[in-house]
Length: 574
Ligand SMILES: [Zn+2]
Image (tube, rainbow, N blue to C red; front, top):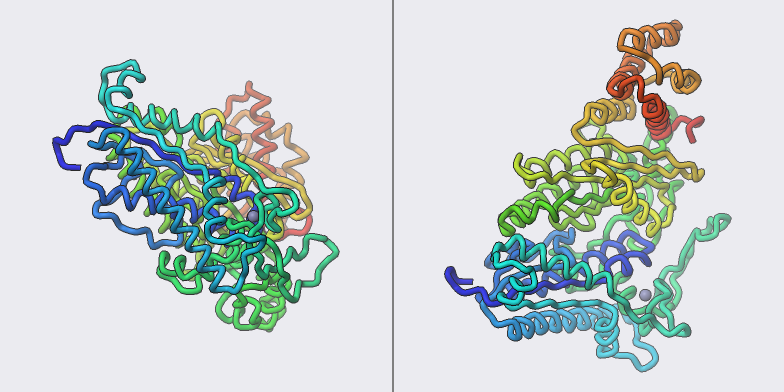
């Protein structure tokens, strides 16, 4: 918009139901495209509107002239807010048109895919039916305000943009809460989501391993009936439109094991089995195990690689900025959107260099699949806790910039590679919104669900000394640089009440000296010392009178040690 042009209207737009579409994903690549689709949908609308000189975006930050997102990471939020010199009726029409064009675009994308892969429409469906289903299922809400009306409804004469953005956000929140969508007719429901009616028949690989005893892999796909959304999510990697969008031919989002076992799946190991390159077939951890043994012919070498538990576990990291709603009132919305935009780009680089795969990074909002830990090409071991610390620090640097009271909270869910994806996602979300963001926020909450079903969960505050010492202990133990004896955890558990009541540093030192002075402990000296430091940071920071809190801290620290031992692959912690 030209400078000094009168702003006559504001608008907000929101799209959904993102979590509805997420929940039915069985494979990472389906989940990826479910998320990417919404981001791409928003991008398409924003692209069309941003070319109009009468329109300026307040949130998110939109570069002019428009630049397409070529990354595989979705970058657009499920909502936008803009200002315009149009009157509100004309602005509404512009947004409606851009949104309808986008719906046409995706109906066409599906249609070309149906033709390309030789699938077929059933029950008399066609491109128009697909569009109709999208139109009913994809919830698009447009909200327009006349500049004078919005000031009236805010009961204020203020024209401060941050306040207007917050005001529109509140309206969009309530629109999202009041959504409903029509589901399919029972007899036609989709093979994958069982939610929408199915109109396309295609060859799909069935669920393998849903039955615990069933170890045989499916050898061929079967003809199944799918709804247009599941069809699109399942076959997106074969779409020419998608390839063009991300500038990658044949891109397939990696499987859970590709991500979790990154430390084991070296180039040489991958060459051992054609399954690792097959786009359709899933492989199991046993396939990696065989390949590792074929590559590393020395038994001890292969054993020590395969002993660790973490390559069988994947982590979902979800993050979200704290207190943004409060802070947004006090600052210029465009420069704030810009700082979020810069943070998102940096976060993407950090996650990728950690060999993780972001599904979505829209400003402060992050969702990524990452390995729990791995030895990097430089020989250094990295862990998901170190990753969370790095993201939190970058957020402070880019977004909070020493003036704003916003921090980043992170939820991490760690699960066995066969754990159901939709439940793992739900758990990550729970860790973020119900644990990390409870009370003071600026926290990391982590949940590990072992294959046995046993769970370990704990929480840290970012910037505290205990997260740093724990992160170091974890990293060094997994790297094999330090170790602590089995008896350590056992003895500490036995004396947990004694430890909880220790008055000062001197007595803590004495306790460790007396209990871990056997000759066999000498090779663990450095590990024992680091554990002692963790207790120091953690327990002695709480006054002795607060005995309940101290008891809880001791219990929590013991879970954290068990977590380290489990990831290292020690049998008794399984
Ligand atoms: Zn479906």
